[in-house]
Length: 216
Image (tube, rainbow, N blue to C red):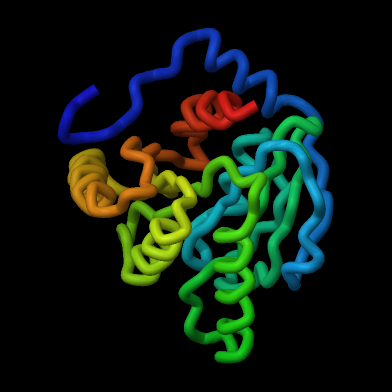
């Protein structure tokens, strides 16, 4: 792996197969939570999907589990207003978080969403990793960095996943990964490896499945 571009080496065959088997299993919707006291009790590892509105969180979850409509997707930013939990074979819990950074929503709603996200991310004992999704077309924004600083302070490990990588040219993607790696070096809770993905093309899904399967 290059020292400059932290793209993971392809997982070995055993890890890829473990990821394939896990994500080919049954995945069911558990509950949608608008308040922290609604978050379900769980004793299995949990992975959270966080990111700006319309970054592709639901699309990524659907691509990982090979389902078209498990997690509801929308072209309207701010549509997801609650934390949606999905049980993957009673082995891994997936949490699809409300998007942050959608300024057109009412200020009271934005404040409520932000408070819910921060309280969940900093106080959930079952969380093994938070995937911070960044749209490759736009790169990391100020509110992404703000969320990362909250996670740094809470010592919650997180990893940046670039979405919609099929929408930009290879040279631009290479530059984006390099710039993102420089930013992540400033954040103590950040995982150093950046995973470029495309939910539409399936790019990076085997890598991400293998990494997440390791938590079980």
